[in-house]
Image (cartoon, rainbow, N blue to C red; front, side, top):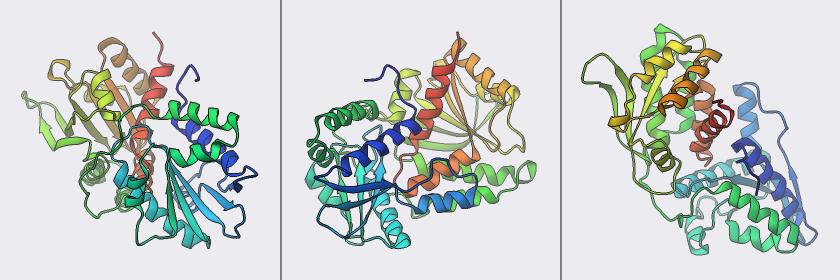
Length: 349
């Protein structure tokens, strides 16, 4: 095991490289990556990027070429809906690229009967593989088998069975919400719309993990207004339960900033006023349209270092990426964990 946790992006790349090696073994078949090394620069490039499969795979003794989509779960919660979304997305990838079928691979150790339940009648050409299938293929090579177990241990941050179900969400898609957010004009002209769609996005992404989400809550002194606040559910083995434990917080605050320019120290300090350790409210997520400048980042680090208050800033593209990724079955908390990891690993004394 590596001494430090690998950032989520690099961890996904490690998985992709290992999957290619497992699937390209002589006794298994042929496999290749399909996406460019550089990430897309704009919305149009992102749309093209997402239409490509993570990998293509041709099994031995077969002439069919399959799309392979890998979904990395770091917490074994809300996987059932995410996997269903991933199946639907893979079906679209198959049609778009003229492929013969597809495989959704998840980084979870799910029983075969559960995997069978998830298979969609609307997409019979899509298989679902869990860790058991990967382990059976990696068993041909001891080195690959060891690397797989190491990567699993780096990836899954809890040891739950992964069989929790979650309520179905409304039919509105993350892609639609992201499109609405991008259309909102920056600045004062669009601030109410931006808050509205940010709230819609948070409910879409995290309603299963955060209960009693309330908008526009005022503090008792009527001076400070929180855009959205939610209670972290007590379910074990999730990103949010880790947040609750590590930062002694029962609630999380979301704040939306539709500024044209990156937010600065003042905006971070305003958000900090919403946090109160004795009220078990020590964590905030700021959605800043244009991100944060250096002084804002230093202020957030100082608040964490001195008072134990965690303020994470994500920009509009981060939020839109989480939304469109959720439609394809990608857990949105992965990005939040990456931002938190970056902050904690680079913070000075």
